[in-house]
Figure 1 (cartoon, rainbow, N blue to C red):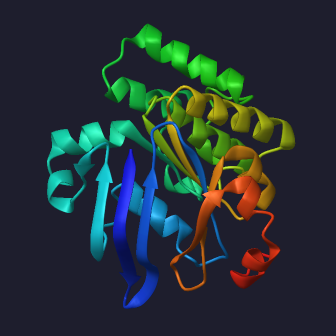
Figure 2 (figure 1 turned 45 degrees about the vertical axis):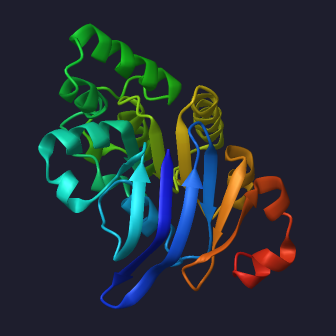
Length: 241
C-alpha cells in the first residue's frame, strides 16, 4: 500500500528525514516512534501529499505520488479520499460551523446520499462519545473533544489508509481504548494504519510493527513492536528513554 524509497526532506537546509526507506502492506498497523524533532510528523505529511520529498520517491497503492499528479484535481480528490490524516493539532483541520457538518463534510463531498451521511455521522458520534455535540461549533470544544471530532471526520471518509499524528493526545482513557480497538478492527478489515506517537505503551497496544526514527532523522530500527520496544539499548540510543 505504501512504499517510500530513500526519501529525504529538509526545512531550509535543516534535515527532517534522511534516506528513509519504508514499506507498509495493506491491512498493516505500524507505529512511528522517536524523540521530538526526529521527523515523524514530516513523514506523515509526505504520506498525505502535503510535502514533496527533496529526493527519493513515494508510491501509494502502486502509483507514484508526485506534485505534478496532485495538481490534477481529479487525481488529488481520489488520492485524498483513499488516505486520511489526523493532524497533531486538531485546530489545523477543523473548519466547519458545527461538529455534525465537520464529520459530514467528506461523505457529502464524495456525493453520498444524505441518509448514508447521517448514518455515518451518527455511528461516529456514538463511537467517540460525541452525542449531544452535533450542533456545537468546533471553537466551543475542549482539546479532547476537538481531537475526537477530527478523528471522526477522517473515519467518515472510510479511506484505505489512515495516518495519525499523536491521535491519543487529549483523550480520556475510555475513549482512547474505544478508538484503539476501532483502529485495530479497521486494520483487521484491510485498512492500513500508520500512527506517530511518543507513547511507547500506545505503540505496543495499537501496532504490530514499530519503525524507530533516530535523532539523525533516519530509520534506526524496524520490526515487531513486542521485540523492539523491549530493546532498552536501542531505546536509550535514540533518546526515547
